[in-house]
Length: 241
Image 1 (tube, rainbow, N blue to C red):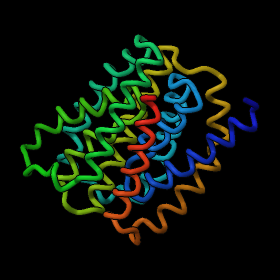
Image 2 (cartoon, rainbow, N blue to C red):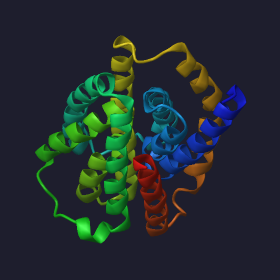
Image 3 (tube, helix red, strand yellow):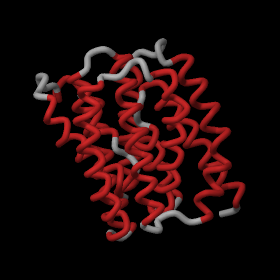
Image 4 (cartoon, one colour):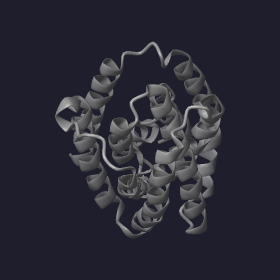
């Protein structure tokens, strides 16, 4: 694969993934990683998406910093930071093909949750349980750079206001991505080729974020969830083949 082909594939998928994240506050990595893993080694994809996810958080944060549930934020972050350290270890220790299989299963489960939301409802639970869901998300983030599903599942039922939910999610993912990238750096997961790809993706990320942020309030949540859920279900199945 030529450099131009690599950049083009990354650009299309990153644009779509971070357009979605700017709309909802999550799913940038969840969308991007499974599709990129079809074309590239998942151990090459995950660190790149991790840096892009952090940059995305920095771009979005100024507009959402007034819309944060600080109580939920604290407990979820405690769990996420612990879980991310565990997940980073697994990223280095587990073979790429095994990671791809695990991630395929992971994506399918979350896509089904999105498609059949009403069957996954649970009543509001004690805030302290945010540590558990944060830890699950952190482990997934460390392994796949996609810490969203467990955290979104939890906060989606704890926080009813969409603006506060979006702001809280973006903040959690920003802090966790900073921590995760630090762990990746000090454990030797990054290499120079990854940094080069990230540099090419910065303009793509900025454009996707600007467009998504402008129209996020106009998009029907139901249409969004069913569309993304279907796409993720297909990508998860492809990863298992």
